[in-house]
Image 1 (cartoon, rainbow, N blue to C red):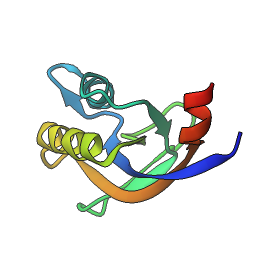
Image 2: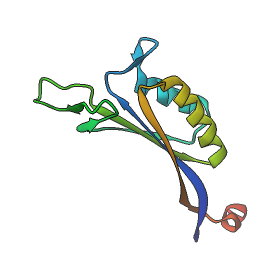
Image 3: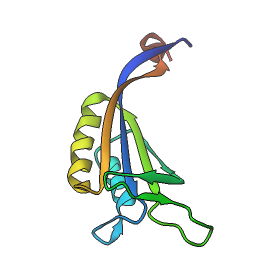
Image 4: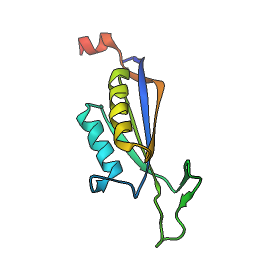
Length: 117
């Protein structure tokens, strides 16, 4: 089985852990929005330090006191799906996060092998 490279888009969303949307964690609502938008999959990663436009550093100060740590959500899918999902997420976030899109390539099973398999 020989893999092929296929064009795709990567969606990266950054939000603060303490941010809320409709009384739920914002990161949870973002992931549910991606699911409903038909995105193939998403991964959520919790960061240990960040700062944003307000230039305020968010970090683990000690094991007990943590303040609005960064949550990064990444998803890769077909460009049209990612662009549509990015607009939905950007509307949800307002000024409480960052949405970034970049072109990428994914390695996948070749067309010929899928038809024969």
